[in-house]
Image 1 (tube, rainbow, N blue to C red):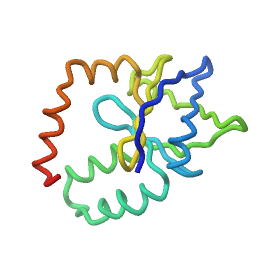
Image 2 (cartoon, one colour):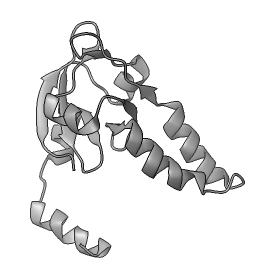
Image 3 (cartoon, rainbow, N blue to C red):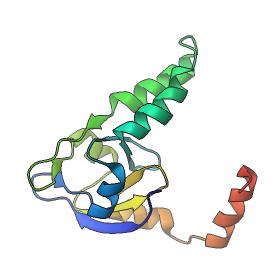
Length: 142
């Protein structure tokens, strides 16, 4: 399970380094795709293939809404290639989507890491009622 919140920065060359504790959980090969609420999802290659892709493969090719979702997710994907210092260049399309300029928050979200622009993360959490959020889990049997 991946959890925690880490603040860091994008450098002047649009390079980013995931915090070591998060990267350790993802393993050596991981993929970044557009996520929800203006964040980026980071999945280990194994998680993306074994869980997400296996479920998506079962969707009918004739279901245009499902195919649109699959295309949107996977066309935004990028397999991370780190330099010797563990940094990678964040593609401009993903940087723009997440509205990342400098300050970044990376969070653990169970089976993935999420990368947020710090401003967007703060807006998302503004006025958060944690007890109400926990109560919402009951609809999923938790």
